[in-house]
Image (cartoon, rainbow, N blue to C red; front, side):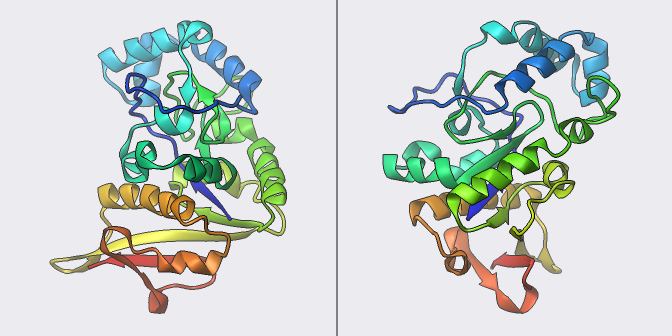
Length: 252
């Protein structure tokens, strides 16, 4: 199986890295092209497009301007948002990281589809923003079938043809327009008990997505049914609320 994650806005390029060998992003040329085009956007345009503060707009304008000379870091260790807090990559052993390289993929507005050890430069460019070079109005349209085609190749190499969708709707849209033929896609839903019954907690769900991807790698899961045993942080599979395409896990 291959688990799909969204990237994070929060980045960490300071924490010392474990000993590992980075790989090159498969869409490196596309990332450079997009960064060069984004570098032409004014700070005000970035503020409006990304709905961010003046300070963040200035930071990202600088990132795009200096993209070619920016430091690189493996994606799994560069992203530092809630999903990656749940993943806790720094505490995984080398064998689990190696398994992640084959069984985890990160969707990206700038890099398309990343393997965990693909070296990336600092950026912020969400897939759902209404901007893209040329005639495409969004990055989803700009990427077209390229991300889905590459995922298809990765699924063929991995062998299971099973996709565990742990990505947000914003990023899943890049796959939904070109879902690999023959792939079995299972979307994961995380819920928890609340004062008025079950509820969706966005913060907890993001962390749980990372924890589930970690669980796959820690336990070297190859049988998709074994994923129903995921029990991190008190979650349990809810068979009554699940079907062939959507599995629900509930924290009580």
